[in-house]
Image 1 (cartoon, rainbow, N blue to C red):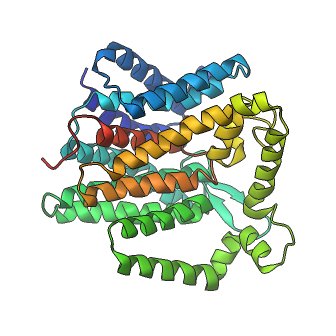
Image 2 (image 1 turned 60 degrees about the vertical axis):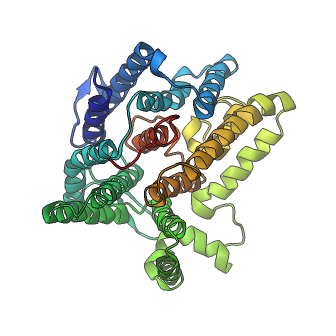
Length: 403
C-alpha cells in the first residue's frame, strides 16, 4: 500500500466529508462524517500494525506511546471507551508519517491536496453566508449573528477555515522556494484564502481570531521580521481599542476590564468561572485521584459533566482527566516536540511556520478543546496534520530538506 497516496486521499476527502451540508448522507443512522472518520481510523490502525517493523523509536515516539498507554489505563477507573479512543486514535497519523520518506515536494503535495478538498466547502459556505442562510446562533447580548456555513457549527466552520489558510500558506511558501509559481495558482489560492477569512469573520469564533493574530506575531518574531511584527501589534492594538465591532465581539472580555462587570468569572463565555470550579473540584479530590486523574466524563472534568471536550481548555482537561501523571507526560511530549523543532536541521524559513503553529495550538488549547480530541469533525485534522509534520521534522536520520 502506498502510504503517501493514502494520506493525500485522506486530505482531499476529509474536508468534504466533514462538511455536513455537502455530504449529508447517513448509513444506519450515522452521519457520513462519522463513518468516514471511523473507517479511516481503523484503516490507519491496520496499516500501523502491518508496518510495525518500520517504526523508529525515539524520545517523542516513546512519549506518545506512554501518553496513549496511560489514557488506555485510565479506563480502569473511568470506563469511557469511546471518549478515550477519540484521544488515542489521532496519534496514529504520527506513526504512519514515520513510515514515509519525507521531502519538501511531498509536503507541498499534501498541502495542495488539502486545498483541493477545501474548495467546495469554502465556496459553498461563503454563498450560504452571503444569502443569510446557515445561521448557527444569535448572541443575545449583542445581536451578532453567527454562521456555520456548510458545517455543523460556527466553531467547526472557523477552525476548518483556519486549516485552509494554513494549507494555503504552506503550499505557497514551499512553491516559492523553487521559483515563482504560476499567476493562476497564486490568484486561485489567494481568492480561496480571502473567502476563508470572510467565513472566519462571520463565524465570530474568537479563539480563531486570537489564533490568527498569534500566528502572525510568532511567525514574524521567529523570522526576525521586527518591522512587520511591530506593524501587526500596532494594528491589532488599534482595532482592540477603537473598533466598536471588536468590543461587541469580545463584549464579555471588555466589560470586566473596564469595570462594567465586577466579577471576571463570566469572562470568555464563563470560561474563567468554569475553570475555577473545575480546578476547585479537582484539588478537593483525594491525592490518589489527583495523581492518577478523575478520568474522562467523571465528576468535575467539565462544567456540564457531559464529556471531555466541555472544559474549553485542553490543558486543564488533561490535568483533571489524567492527573499529574498524564499532564506531566503530555507537557513533556509537547516540550520535546518544540525543542526538536527548534534544533531541527531545517533552515529557519521552513522552521518558522511549524514553530508558529505549535505555539498557536498551545495558546488556542488554553481556550478551546479543538485540537486534542478526535471529535470526528474537521478541527481534528489540524492536530493530525500538525503531528504529521512533526513526524517528518523530528524523524531520526533524514530530515525534510530541499530537493
